Image 1 (cartoon, one colour):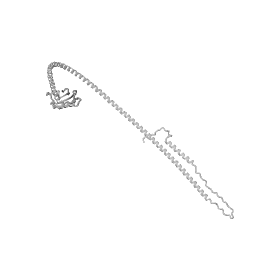
Image 2 (cartoon, rainbow, N blue to C red):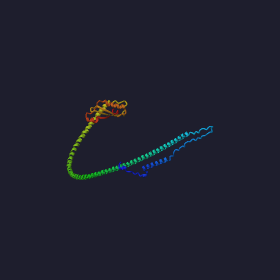
Image 3 (cartoon, rainbow, N blue to C red):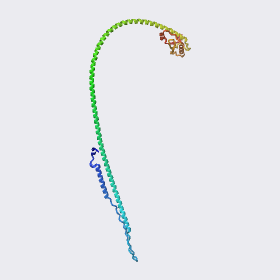
Image 4 (tube, rainbow, N blue to C red):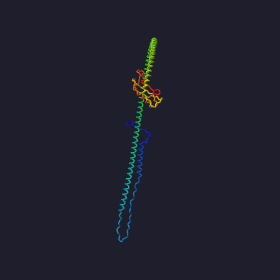
Length: 345
């Protein structure tokens, strides 16, 4: 046990109320009560010995007889038995008194032992409380120390962070100043280069304007010449195109008439056909005149009439087409034809 644990812990209780003083007082009280009980115990009442009185009656006899003394042996036995009973009762009373006294002494010892146990428990409890308070103080001191150390570490960390930021700020300012100087130098160099470039550009612009004027004059002359030539070619091409168009139109009309004639020969109109019925078909041909496909674009409203027109188109193995490929591609690669009884008479 350390010196700190041996210190007397003041609990604010008066000395006469301490566990030790109460225990001593209780022991003294028990002894006094035991002595008083012993002195007040009344002895067992002794029974007086029983006595037998006897009277001798003498009668006048003719002849006198000798006097015989009565035998007192029964009285002595009775007295002896009474004495034994009294002694036995006294012994029993003494035994009971001793047992009572032993019981009281045992109770006193048990009470004293209980008082000592409680005093010891109280002492241990007080010592445990004292240790707990000391441990609590030690823990609190350790906690406060840890908090102080943590705060100091935080302060040092904050100081280091402040110094680092200050150094970074100064470094950033230095870098900013350096960049500003560099920017000013670059700006001055850029302006100088721009001025030189501007002068060079102005010179080149003037030179280009001069050359442009010359080129424009030459271009105007060339353009005028080309325009005249182009106009002449355009007129020639227009004339050729008109001639070609007229030829192609003439060819297309001729072959359309031939195709219509061939189809009219192959078309067998149903009996239900009327002059108002019209079926429009789209025909696609190969450059050889062979049929690729036929599609009903607009129905007449009569299925038999539509089917008769489709059958007429499909019945021709080869269609008459012009030899000129351009005319074929323009007019006969894909074209639409109408089947109407009134128009095909």
